[in-house]
Length: 256
Image 1 (cartoon, rainbow, N blue to C red):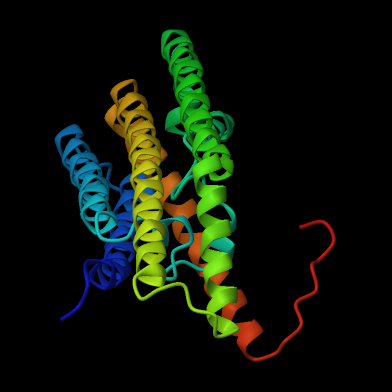
Image 2 (cartoon, rainbow, N blue to C red):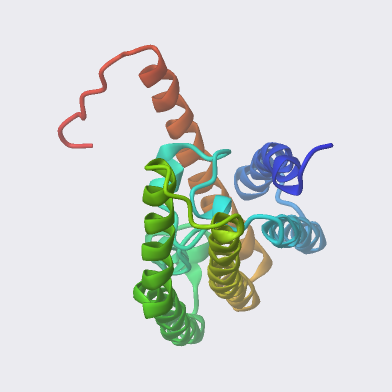
């Protein structure tokens, strides 16, 4: 029987494939010869936001079984993992993307002064939310130096050394230490799951907040850009991983 994490790994592959299909529709809606109606644009935006919400629903369900794998997921490439912010994309990235798209002369190039003002207000709010989550993660990391955990590590090490030298610490000694370690790890996992969900909530707030401030055509352009960024990063990571597997040395090109 497969675990929830194994099921999520397969789900993620299908999710990315579907995201790529949505990307093609988004690009067609943005650049097609026949402009779609506003109703069609709204429907496409709704479908894609539902797609993203579904991802977090599945992610949170799998994380209840093992949250640690989401901090360095095996289903993602090393390149993707290098850009993770607490198990996902960093919300601030979205605002940088909007700023660059404004220079494109397309839909987001026509943002009104009021829209720009409200997007900036949202950016500051999200920045504050990011800092709060970063602070919580820092507290989790500092907690590793908690006196109880340090003493537990010493006890576990001492028990191991005694067993290796045949001294023995009593029949229940190793079992008791193992149980204490298990409790400590579970406690740490609970804290990390809380951090992960907090970070995901900031991501969802960012997505919803920006889309609420944009017109349907602007939403489509933004979603196309952020989807393309995610998919292209994954594709580059997969290419690099295949090349590394073939023992081909990759030399970074100047100017890239």
